Length: 127
Image 1 (cartoon, rainbow, N blue to C red):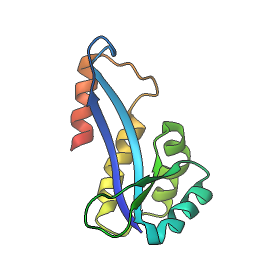
Image 2 (image 1 turned 180 degrees about the vertical axis):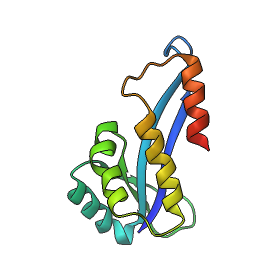
Image 3 (image 1 turned 60 degrees about the horizontal axis):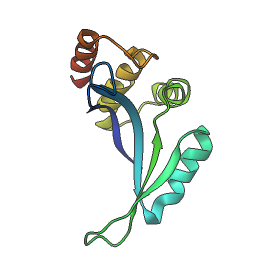
Image 4 (image 1 turned 180 degrees about the horizontal axis):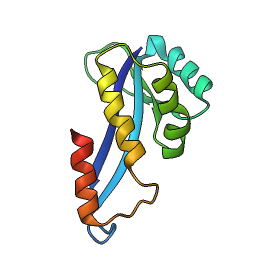
């Protein structure tokens, strides 16, 4: 399986909507082609969290991509991160996962945070 993305993303939003102008989300994603989508279903069944989505392809590829995605912070902290800490990835993605896990663990459960703290947290998570 290919671990496609393990990242902490920040999306600029209008200042009237959010105190700092940013909304932070964490998303653990594994992608597979349509011929291997059953693997993603097995991940979903094993962890008991997340969803499988289709990424329809409109280019010259022959099959759609599917992605298993977990973005709920509690699920990441209680299921995904502990599993991959006990059974670490054996590829270059291990470093990416450790950065991702560190950001999820350091980020407060409360969605509001002073702008100075937000900037400091974003800088440390991008390293």
